[in-house]
Length: 203
Image (cartoon, rainbow, N blue to C red):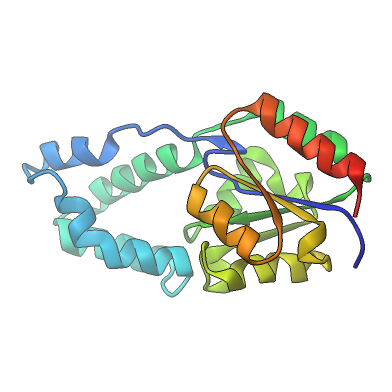
């Protein structure tokens, strides 16, 4: 329970995930007003992020709410995952890989049903860290304090010995409220320096 620990977010940190404009392109294709897709799908996106529905359910709801046939649903979901998965932040991933054995390593991610399988296949995050805590698997999303507690429990570490790295300020504040140290990701250089200082200081 006294081990030094680093817990990282995925999207915007370990993955580079700029907006691709895919939603607006689909709205234009379907001749829908801007904002319609997310308005119609909001509760489905939320349910998928908390794991209360499965991937098949998501596909069925996309078809029903947007009037898409099976081929269109396949294309719609492919566009969703392209933006969601982004590209790997190779520099940070390589640095974290080099930390293995010197501290406990984990991931805490607000995710979507299906993310674990895709991220494991593409980026091998399951081999990068010891534990991945996905919101769609625990039914809790950041900034809920219980999500941070679940991540600490999964690694058997104390919150005060953990550094949490995220690109969203409200999650950073929530991590601090949960007793963790935290760092707002803005670039690799400052993030790597902050992680190094934490690991070298120890619990």
